[in-house]
Amino acid sequence: MKSTLKKSLALLGAAALGMVALTGCSNDSTAKGGTTGSGTGASTTGGSGGTGGKTFTIGMSQSNLGEPYRVQMNKDIEEAAKAHPELKVVFKDAQNDSLKQRSQVEEFVADEVDLIIISPKESQPLTEPVARAMDAGIPVIVLDRAVLGDKYTTFIGADNRAIGLAAGKWLAQTLGGKGKVVELKGLMTTSPAQERHAGFREGIKGSGLEIVFEADMKWLEPNARKEMESALARVPKIDAVYAHNDPAAHGAYLAAQAAGREKEMIFLGIDALPQEGRAYVEQGLQVASFQYPTGGKEAIETALKILNKQEVPKKITLDSVYFTKENLAQGGAPITQ
Image (cartoon, rainbow, N blue to C red; front, side, top):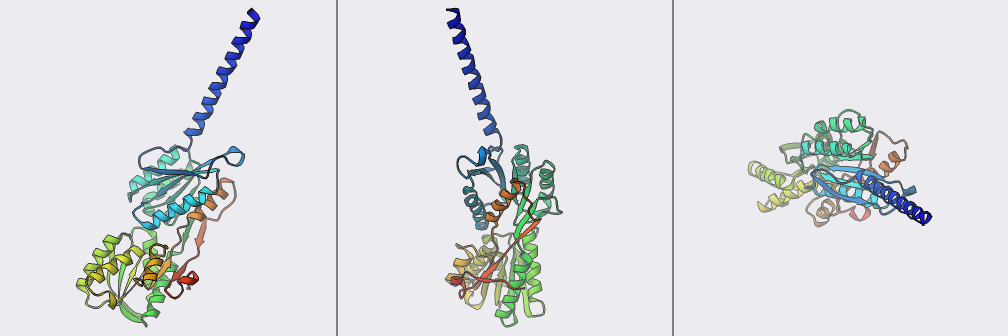
C-alpha cells in the first residue's frame, strides 16, 4: 500500500513540474516582441513555425499613414514578410509626430526587438533614438528618409536628388527651354524634399524656366490644392507645376480645374504608385510621374541578411524610372543624369 502511494505521489509531482515548464515557455514566447505601448499598429507574421523554431521580431515605425505612399510601403513590408515564417513584424504609426516616433523607437528598444525598420518623419529628431537603439545592440534599417550621421546599420532609398534632376531636365526639354513654373514642395525639414528641390533646380539651371511660385505643402494633397489656389490668384500665366509627390500634383490639377485653367499648364509629380501617379498619367491629369520605390521588399530582404549575421552595404540605392503616357505599357523608362 505504501509503495503504491509513493508511486502515485511521484507521478503527481512530475505532472506538476511539467505544467510549470510549459507555462514558463508560454510566457517567454509572448514577452519578447509583443505589441506594447500607445500608438501600436497591427502586427503580422510570416506564418507558423520557422527555421529550427527560431523567430525574429522586427519593429517598424512609420512616420504617418496619411500619405498613400506610406500605406503602400507598409503593405510592401507586410507582403514580403509573409514569405518568411520566422519573421514577425510589429507596425507603429507615428501619426506625423516626431516626438511620438521617438517614443516608438524607445518602446522597441525596451521590448528588445531583434531589428528596427524606421521611415523617419524628420532627420534630426530621430537621429538620437536610432543611435540609442544601435547602442543597445539592435540593428536599424533607415528607410526612405535619412537620419543624421552614420549610427545606423543601413539606409535604403532611391536617389531623390537624381530624381529631381531628371524631372528638371525632362521639364525643360518638354517646355522647349522656357516657361513659368510652380513648385509645390514636400516638408522641407525632410531630406527627400530638400533633395528633390535641389536636384530640380540643378536640372533647370541654364534654361529659360522661371519659378514664379513655390510653397511647402508638407506632402499633403489638401495643402497642395490650397497653395495652388494662391498661385492661380497671383500668377496670370503658368506653364507647368512640379510637385514633390503625386498627391500634390493632383491637388494642383483640381485647383486649376476649378479655376478653369487646367488646360494652360502641365503637371508632373514623384512617387508613381500604381493607384496614383501612374493612374493620373494614364487619365491624362499628369504628363509624367517619376518613381520613388517604397523599398519595403528590399527592407525585408536586407533584414533577413542582418538577422542571419551577413554583411550588408551601409547604403542601398534603389533604381528609378519615370512614366509618361507613351511608356506606361513598357513599365516606364530609366531616369538619366
